[in-house]
Image (tube, rainbow, N blue to C red):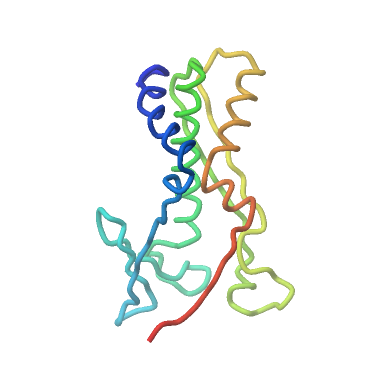
Length: 168
């Protein structure tokens, strides 16, 4: 898809959202069920069932998916799609590109071994490997806009309101 095609596809959506902001509000959902045989959760992905379990650093077998890895994978997916959309809109000359994310965890926190150890990622690094001859200022603009419009990046960067409840 080129910039003209992308803009043509998005133009009616942008117009509708400008006319009625409520049309832009979409609730995404995820669902999972607790496995009855092991410490795992079966997550419905829309394509297949993904089974998430404990990371080996917390006693898991390593056969199930790790939710920390899934978070990084979601960041890579969103950042990659956003980068491609921004590059297309800017008519940025981009050959091959890859996206990598890595994050540092101290599993003492999640295991309750040390009260001063945080639960969750302490640092996340996102790297784009770009095949391009574009000047550095265009690359900087591409990255700035990708960061600005990547939903997962911005969600991690600016903590959303979170609620937890139980239903019976």
